[in-house]
Length: 160
Image (cartoon, rainbow, N blue to C red):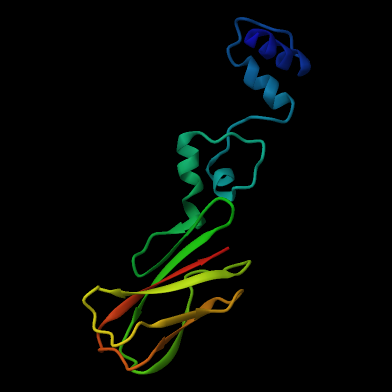
């Protein structure tokens, strides 16, 4: 049954079955506009519906412009368009608020923002507030009752 299914794909592509050609099934898929292997650029674009991804190319899909893994400010773009970003922000501006740029802009909007003391032993009287406006490339941090100069926090941003 499986052999007949493979034969049908080959014949539908206009090829005659050839038991000596081990790549014939792939040729048949390619002749019908399917198959073929994505190169690194195609994998990173995450846009082809007909190219195959090998495990190595799947790893490539998460690299290039889709990621920046720098501790102080980075991002990762996931398949489907979800974007995770982070940025370390120095504290010490006392009470009030301060605006900072996102590592990259969210093309379709922001979903959430969180602030974490970094290091955990940092002195903060209150939890910082982080706000982000959908579609903007920046976020605002608000501190009430101040923070000790020299400390920092990491802001985690989620959008698409």
